[in-house]
Each structure stands twice: as structure tokens, then as C-alpha cells.
Image 1 (cartoon, rainbow, N blue to C red):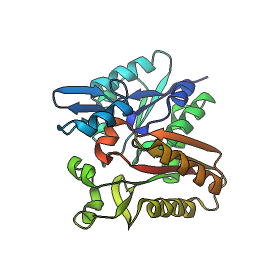
Image 2: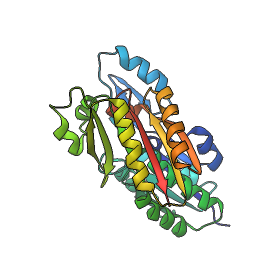
Image 3: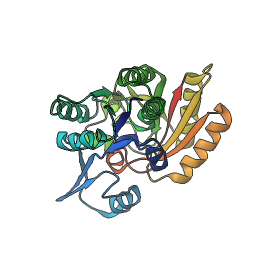
Image 4: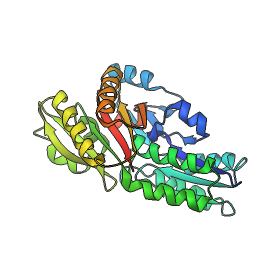
Length: 281
């Protein structure tokens, strides 16, 4: 039986129990805070990050996983696998894909494939989980890669931020730039489209924004036999749990996941962000 290892980066924020269950290798993005550098989710937890963010006058910055870090992860994964499939955050918002490709070129004899997921969060996480499940069934590297690529058009993520300041500050704002200047007292509803952050709607209250998000996703998964859902949150667990319960009651997913936004993503979205990722087939 061919053994294929799945590699992703920490912006997928697949819950640890699922990472462990499927043996997924997670490459941590880097958080740079003044003179300190942290590995995303390894050296600093989301709770620690948001507590410090409240009081620290220095704005954190982020950096993609280095080629060397990917190379080490590939090498480690190949100790117990015949091939590696790396599924990483959209190249439209990060240089992570480039690092993963450079690392692959450093190991020319290894069977390694790299996919730019064109998304992030559990939208990417669901692709990784599907790939890992296929690999566990003994599928070949080519088969697992094809399955992952086919799923890219069946996943998505929509999120609501309390403010656009963090996205603007980090240069990840994309088409939502046009909301700047008239975003006071509104909650922007955003998505990843063609690999970049794009605006969907401006809504007056967060409650209305969440309703809009649920209705939009309900429309997008309508008629699909198999729906998987994940809430994502940045220091807003209670809100996210309520959101997951409400949307699950309406859409009856076969799998539901509560995911916490990693510090690197939280740097760009800011605290209070909530969202939904889906996979519908």
C-alpha cells in the first residue's frame, strides 16, 4: 500500500485531534513581534496572542514558512511515507507556496507535489482532511492530488471582521480596500475569491452580518448531498459555538468543526472575527 503524507501550513487551523488522527504535518507560519519570533501555534497559542495584543503597543507582523522549514518537514514525513502532498495557503495572500516549491526543488529525488489551495482556514483544512482520508485508503500520490484539486471548487470561507484596520495594516485587504473610509459602524463581510480577500457586503450590525453569512452559504451549498462546515473565530469562542449550532441545525452537515484562528491569521483579521468555512459535494 502506498503511503502518502499530507503537509499543510498553520493557517488551516485544523483542530489538533484531527491533525493527530490523520498524521497531517503542519508547517508553522512565523509571527514577528518586535525582536521576538514565534512559530504559529507552537511557541505562542491563540489565547496568549490575543491577551498580549490587548496591551502591546508594538504591532505584530508575519512571515511565511521558510523553504528550510518545509524541507525539514518533507524529510521527516518521507521517513514513513513514499510521497508527500503539500496543500498550502493561497498565493494571493502569502508567499508560502513559493517556499514549499523551493523546498521541493531541494529534494529532487523525492516524490513531492505542492498545491496552492487558493484559500485558507478550514476551507483548506477540509481539502487536507479529504486528501488524508484518501491517502489512508491507499490512494496514490497522483490520485490524492487530483482529489484535492477537484475539491478546490467545492470549498469556501466567509468571515466577518470587527474592523478592517488589521487587514489594511497587513496589506492583505484586496478588493475590500473600497470599504475603507466608509466602514464606520458597519461590519464588513469578506471572502476569499480567486485566492484574494474580497468584499461581499457591508452590514450595519454583527448579528445581521452573521445572518447574511449563513444565508449566503445556505445558497451556495443548496442541493449538495454532503456538506461539511467549520466555524472559525479570533478570540470569540462563545459566538462561534452559537454560530456553529445555528448553521448546523439548518444545513445538517455530515461533519462540523470548531476552529480557532491562529495567531498569524489573527494578526491580519483582528480579534472578534468570526466566519464559516464549508465543503459541499
